[in-house]
Image 1 (cartoon, rainbow, N blue to C red):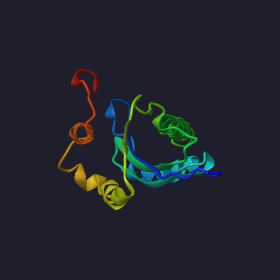
Image 2 (cartoon, one colour):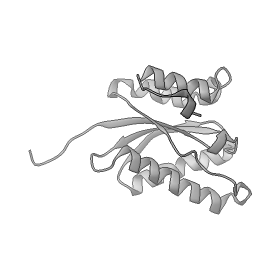
Image 3 (cartoon, rainbow, N blue to C red):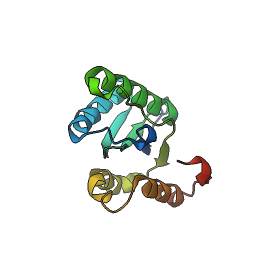
Image 4 (cartoon, rainbow, N blue to C red):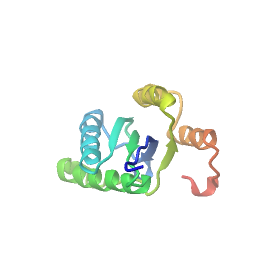
Length: 149
């Protein structure tokens, strides 16, 4: 077979360092467009991005030649640099070191898009920590709570 075909979809979640509430609505609207540009420049796609003042979710479509860790590294590194250059009052900004990445089947894309769209409403009822624990449990990921937050 001369070509490679894939449909590699990942729901990625990460927060600001110490979950500081530094991402205003205005900043997020620019940030999500910037993240989309990072993806386009690096040969992958963002299907949907959303979040709150202390964390973001993004649904990524990756090509087989880029790992999830590389895509997240590119997003976090470049967006952090962009925030420091364009939002001078956020000189303390940084992303947390880790992230959650969960595979998504094509049949679930609409559900995940809606979930990402409704983050602000969702977090009126549930904290980031509760949400993250739920995602880990729902995806059968082993973790030690001692090292989680």
